[in-house]
Amino acid sequence: MSDRRERLEEIRDQLTAALRGAEPSVMAQIAGQLRQVLKEIDELPPVEGKSARERFAKRVAAAERPASSA
Image (tube, rainbow, N blue to C red; front, side, top):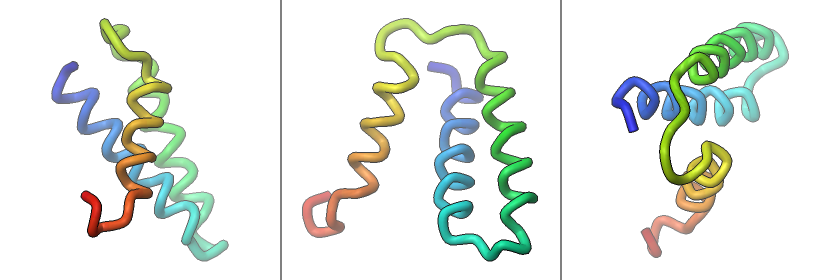
């Protein structure tokens, strides 16, 4: 997996988390940034192996684990 893809996926995850807790006054700005990041990820060549959905599910599961079990 490319470093660019990894960075974009990390940004996507951070923006998604920020959007969940955002004040209504900044939601549109965050959503716009998220749309741009998703577009950039979509323009990258496909990754061999696990699908994007599988990688995302793995990151979500890791983020939801309690800190004591990480």
